[in-house]
Length: 467
View (cartoon, helix red, strand yellow):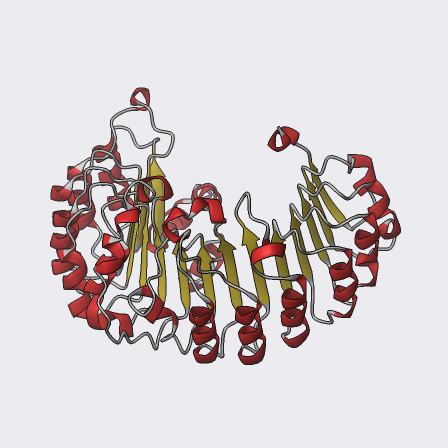
């Protein structure tokens, strides 16, 4: 090893991805230990950091070129020692001049004061906060004022982030490319308007409302009315994920859906108020769409709309089929209690989409309208490689036995399907048709029944969901 040039040793170390393996390799000799210290760019620490501030200081001195740091206290208990506090962020700011990405998870001792110290990290471009209950909007504002190169910001369960001045400030910078806000109770759809011209640069947006908290306050429609009709530029948007959101006709997030001409992936989960015209507008504008996932709320979960029901129908699927020629991943799901055969997407609409687009991945959850006839139609799905069926109770052994005739299918997942038994898998035994078969919580399929049905199989059965 002494004869190898430093660059070659660095190249070897760079191929060792796991920190535990790198730690072991660095103990081989003093030279590797020294070179590893110089090259190490990422570090993940947490409950084992005790005493926290002293240990962090030693690590920062050992690895002077750290760029990515993750501090997580998931599963922390007081007997594991005191958590890292604001002084720990002072240590990071003073000892990690190359810091570009920081993740804080379950750090309950860190406050706004600690974030204020990070404002001196001029290279910081990514900040992810997951359950940091003592951080407020003031702390985030002080950070974004100093870190003007921030392109990634994730806030997950930050319950005390109430003010949105930081959102307005970062909107004026026009640097943000990836924004994720999940279950931050005080932040609603109306607050996103504060992004202003930053919508033009945004490539990825994830916005999730706390469902339990939302249902206690949504029906006054204040969040809906805060949006005013305006043009929102979203030319750079590639991925959009909205969960438990209100889609108000002609304004707000509804405008966003029709302005994403480069969108490649969209996920709409339990979004209230999505209409056919929204999906049709999306399909016509987003011809590059590759993946769509939709979970439709049941009638019983939407008292807001009982007097004026807004339903997604086959018209949406038809628009996708006609305009999105690159679509290859589709997931359609209905919440518990939904009967889509009566009120939403039909089997014919789903099959038409599959026939007109190069669908490689198809997932159907709670789609009771999909039956053995649909399975027979999939025999002509020339691109389909992965099929996931969850709680599709109209599919029987007769339909399942047709899987062997699907031209390119290599992965099959069955979950909580009541109508299929071991007999449905018999034709697959020993054929090597499937690379992978997963069966979960299907009461009439046994572990013995899946053996030999694919090169690799996974079986799990927990029937508590039935009771």
